[in-house]
Length: 128
Image (cartoon, rainbow, N blue to C red; front, side, top):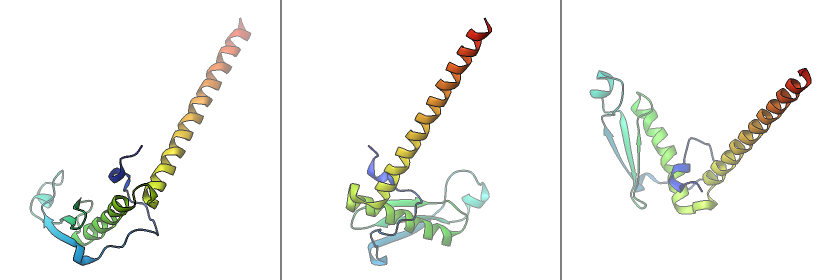
């Protein structure tokens, strides 16, 4: 199975749990990772905590604090949805469906490879 909180991504689900600003605690901190002076001197990394569940999201995907705030809220909403609804969550179902699709694609590719290998062997036998 998929660990529940790891299933949250950047998918657009309509039936997500709604969060209120009163339940959120927001901080701006310095980001980490590459970027040199741009990341070392600016507090544009958003740390968002959902107080009732204790879920914490850290978002530093862009250089804009406003965009990071928006993205952090989206990610937190998905994680909170997973936390409360579990496997009944749309996010979980979407992740499960995409995993199944990926496995099916992998299986088909393997079958095609086997077919090509078999065809090559037959051609080599015909040449002899």
